[in-house]
Image 1 (tube, helix red, strand yellow):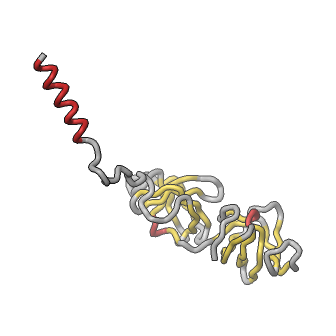
Image 2: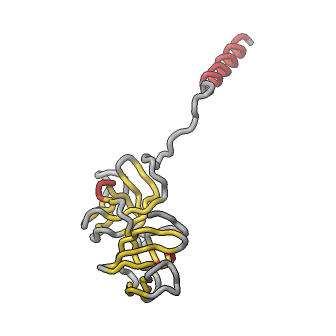
Image 3: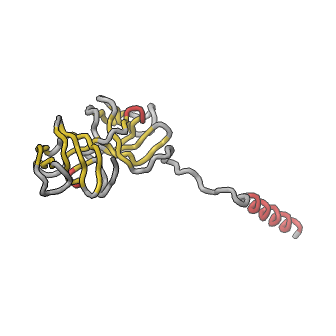
Length: 172
């Protein structure tokens, strides 16, 4: 009986000691979110050759190589200096953050071609045409429209025509 009392007392004390001190946070940082930047978010390739790996480190095998500087990618996980990305084809893998850029880029995903317009309005005069698959620089977005630069032309397209921006995303 004495043994049971000592055992239960020790067990209760252990439980009590494992409780957080008043005011102490029990919130742990997310395992795969190591920067203060939001997830998911868009970035672009900052190099013309980027190895995409199976895991977050040099010891992981290379799955494939992306060879298109400025290609938009979606970052959805982070681990130290590594970012798990999705490319426009839906392929997923890890790349080192030093190979990414914050420059906003997009890919025309609309069927056929899209007209770049003088202002964010479907009735505005077209200034240029961009074909499906064209890589463009995204200058700003708001109210369902994005101002893009394609080759030497600048104009507005509906954000739904682009891969590389979120629906109703706003930035400048």
